[in-house]
Image 1 (cartoon, rainbow, N blue to C red):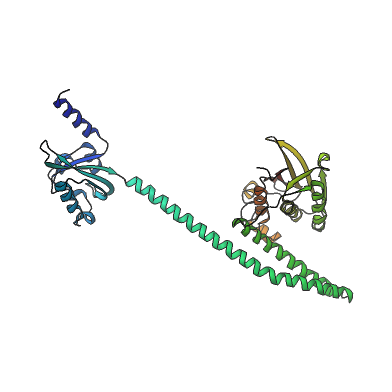
Image 2 (image 1 turned 135 degrees about the vertical axis):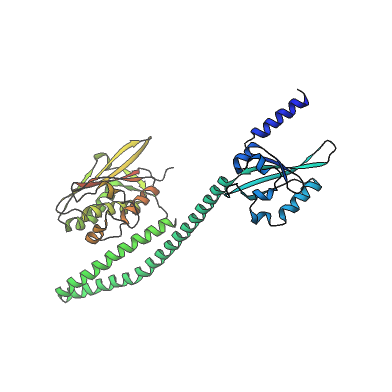
Length: 381
């Protein structure tokens, strides 16, 4: 291939190159541009040849002495350089461009031109800006979450101290009222004690959630009999179930009556109590069933605790909010039934910590079914 052929090939390559290429002399006068330059800037070849590169650089950039010093240094000291500049199209629109400038020598080693190899980096910078903004927003959200967690934890501790005193004094007064046969005072004092314990339970829910979010809750796995756990939960929940004239059914699979499981028994008991409390709260003169059974999956034994009720039920849209913090199925439920809406959130988080989960199935006016799935050995990896 002759030198002429080589020059033709090189010329075609420069013309077809997807990035902008242009040549200037030492003072920045343009004397060659490729097709990519025309396409990017909107200038035709005959409009830009003979013009200074200041024409395509933003005034904030060209008015400084920075560019001229670099061009002079590149031309006379044969030092290439690169930097980002704000460029202007023919229509006045701006774009960000990364320029790599290097000297072009002739056969005698003299610098004849400066070659600019340019890349439009507007999209890249925009994407980086979005990423940085997302990172800042994430950090802000995390800081706000930590601040909220610290505040709620502190307030929960501050509120529990006087509440425990109120509950304690009310119980002492109830004993005295019983001894003095002051039935009227005894009923009023029982209301105070009940209200105090209810408020304390709500505060404990908030405290549990803040501890979970802060990663300060530790699990303490232990081996326990499944039947003992079920009997204990049933005994504890019975008064609450009967308050709304409901009937509690316990269905423990025969093979589980002598079996044990390994998990955090306190958290497992709390999850069951939360589900049964909800069932008792949202059901009147109905049936509440706690069914416990086992099954195999992925070569592991799982224990399923199912709480089924004949209560008011939940729509599909409402189910989407069940495991959302500080949310109940709808606002009217808060007014009618009270609560923070944290019970299910906490239960789900506890189950996940024990490598399990909670499922729900429900239809309005037909009742709800909540199922806790836990590995029989929740301490295994």
